[in-house]
Image (cartoon, one colour):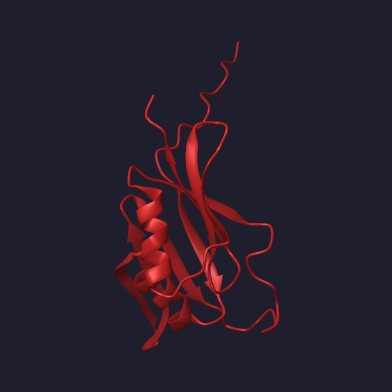
Amino acid sequence: MSSTPEPLQGQSLQASLTVKDLDKSLAWYVEVVGFTVSRRIERDGKLRGVAVQAGDVRIILNQDDGAKGWDRVKGQGMSFQISTTQNVDAVANRILERGGALETEPKDMPWGARVFRVRDPDGFRWTISRTHAA
């Protein structure tokens, strides 16, 4: 008699994104949104990627090597969500003050969260949300 395996119980999720211009993307994530650099990834003496984080959210930004063509579209069909305990209006204002643009303004949603959306330089969509206190 075989037992049913226990389903996956994830504790966190990290993303690895291939970007067209590493310096431009790094500036957006760090200077505009507020991530910090946690690691620089070099190979053969060249910067190939940078790991950034915001709290428990970790992303690796990898420089596209052009092997699949420089014009390939990135970010389509992808959406990531960051949940926070911070005031999302203040986070949105910080992004605007640092030259970023919002795809949607902060608003209350029917499921009990306040959210707004932004897109990075490669078109990856990010939703930043805070659940309302019960």
